[in-house]
Image (tube, one colour):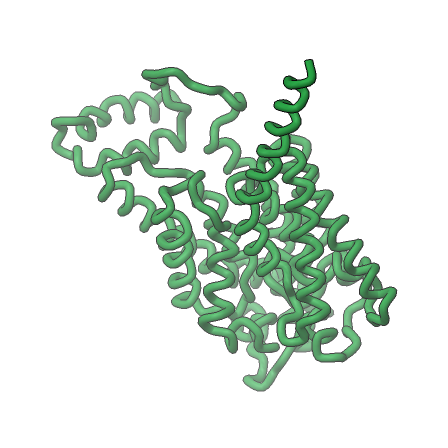
Length: 385
């Protein structure tokens, strides 16, 4: 590592003011600060909130996403071999590497397009490259169907970075979660590609792995089947483990729970937000079950993107509430709204995406009223003394 550090120190003057590569200073700074903690100190007063910087926070979230991503890769191969009837003859490595080869291009496209725009934007504005897309770049591929075309994914990534991050001022200033924005862009711009049954299972052979399924092959998610009034084919055990058709990273509750433990143990995610999302969902699901819904209230947590959204999306510290009381209200609102959309809108059985989007919209207002209430209470206390 010392050799790399010495090399960076040697070429750094070329990228500083007056250097022959000064125009690419932002790019060099982005790579350097990604590899090493910068030695620069603040030139004015600062407020220290935590000992860990944002790059390390983003890196920890990526680590927490690894179990869901790795299982998602395996499940893609599993669903392909299962649909073709050749699962019994396939080895673990064949199943996993089929999914790995199917997901890898999506991750590469997501990062190349998103980071490319971030780099270009930083150069244009003469600013430092921001690190927020480290998480968004892996979240976006995990919340889309495996059948989503790469060009469509590239458009969604560009939309989320430009219109949901940079025009608001970049990382830390965005109102809406960029990954949610990308998913919404795809859903409303290309609904047939995002809601059709065939998109949930990879249909083509890759480098001799997997099977090419018939063009007419369909495979609905359990949540989609319930939305159509059909009993789901998968068992509860399969839903919990994740052996069901669905978005790449959203199927396994166990893998998501491992990520949740990592986020809570490191203190990166708010347990108040995460808990209240499940409480809000449970309350509304129980009410609907009591009024005639045929679906058990807790089934909502093991189908679709509810668990993934509650753990990785609703807890985004930038777009969620920051006050302690506000986090309870925000989480309950997201969970309750997700169930309301699922049950009452038969044409849109998921619900979690829209719930988090609307939660992001109301988060600043919730925090405003919580702070205003605290100020009012303190003023009253001060007046009685």
